[in-house]
Length: 357
Image 1 (cartoon, rainbow, N blue to C red):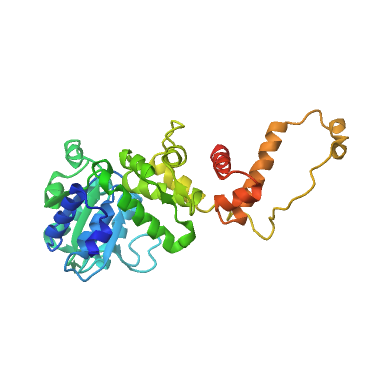
Image 2 (tube, helix red, strand yellow):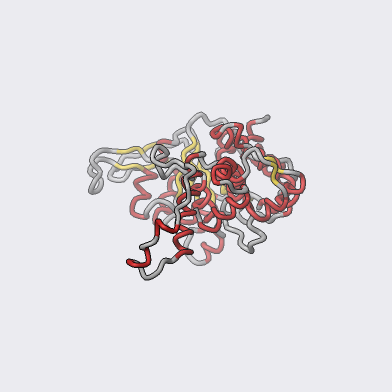
């Protein structure tokens, strides 16, 4: 498999065109802007541009939306000792770290306007000055940016510099929505299964039948590549070594039957937690044993001291405790946990979903 095919998975016409564009412009040192919706794989495209280039330096990433406004200049340009309160020693910025390589400015649309002016100077002169320094550092860095925003609209509303957009937009690259790449879905799913199996082992592999794959190919994937990854992680937790039907996909993976389709941002939080199920309680302290059920005599005096009992809430709490214990004991494997609880696996999955475990 070619290195580019490992980054951009699939052989649809949209995927092929994207790979051709990357291969065509990768050898250039000119800036590029990667446009695409959230979760579409813009950073993978940026990495592919770097790997296909002749550059020997590092690929360095900066998320412009994740760094506070007051810190982003020092993060990108570096700073000298004493440049500001807390600067106890000089520090190399992202530009220097990317020397002879590629600097990837993710979410460029969130870069503060005053910093956009300084970035424009870098593009024109290929030099930077650290915060607190008057000396200049010569750069050999290719700048690649990405955004999900409409930068032309931001220019019109004075939120993005027009001259900077012209300077960066030498090579605009549009990353297609996954809804334009339906035929790539099975290949992308297989990619994430293999990637996950390298960490979890072969026993966690789910098996999608033909109808299940058809449902997934016909789905619109509003969360794009990120949503596929989340679905695969969910499948590996719920269906290890198990064949997955089209009904399973609708009910447990896409949640179509319930009328709820969890979006990518929510899935990132929810399913990363599901992947860690059973790790919150020490296994040495939690064991599941068969015991004789309590008799009415054990609670003969209960109502003498308690006016009532919320039986429904009590049973719910007991059920949650035992489900969590079973999942902990089996490392999140629902099939094995269901055996411990003497439940059908799908019933256990329903309860996990119901209680938000």
